[in-house]
Amino acid sequence: MIGIVIPCYNEASRLKVTEFVQFNKEHMDYVLCFVNDGSKDNTLQQLETLKKACRYPERIEIVTLSQNSGKAEAVRTGINNLLNMVNIQYIGYLDADLSTSLEEYTYVVDYLSNNSVFSIVCGSRIKRMGADISRETYRHYIGRFIATLISTILRMPFYDTQCGAKVFTRNLAEFCFSKPFVSKWLFDVEIFLRMKIHYGAANVQQLIYEYPLQRWIHADGSKIGLKDVFYTPLQLLHISNHYNLFKRYKVEKSLNSKRSEESI
Image (cartoon, rainbow, N blue to C red; front, side, top):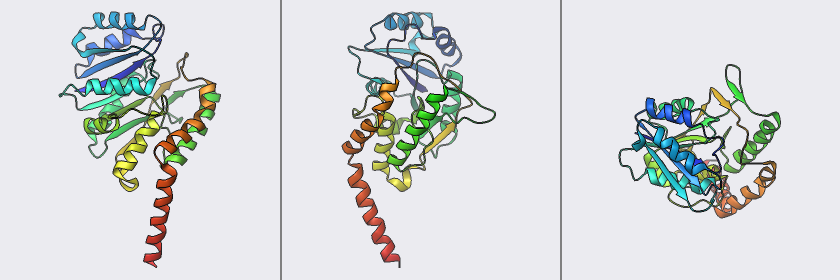
């Protein structure tokens, strides 16, 4: 079984009920866990309507947070809810606007289930010939700047850490989502930092695969605005301090220097 967490905050007007209902009908090995993150509109009512319309409502979970806690905590809550189901082998999350379609997400899941060497597969919005990756030009360039900044901080060759389509093995999900995140939106960065610290820089890159999405369409009504983008460097600095990155990299550099001297 596969579990997908779909965080929802004020999604009543954007929730694609028909697509979720059809997916529930056609994919009996999937459990959808919608997390209503303290929405102020009719999101909860829409989710309840969606569940009633499904052929297999027992495979639809609805979790409601009493107040808006941010995407990080909404996803973490949903994943821990799914971890209570012992028959679920793979757990991931997907944006409610379906910028990455449900069908496309199944390809990401299939890649992980068919390649046991990896523990996480991340959708990657690589704009290229033969693919339909559609986003506004300014968002693309801002996204590339942020992605480069994140890759530099992580010291890992990521193209796209922020795509909202990721799937984990059960064991990795248990590890990555056991503790709350410090950032409400950049928790993806924290996931990779937790992995790097736990598994080591040399091993972690062998566990992660970036899957080039065939289709990704930007949906209007994004909860991340330009104001949030300008605060991104400060958020990354906060994350770096929380995980003692500068100290860790200083120690790592010192060890590498000693190894180099010993090899001469």
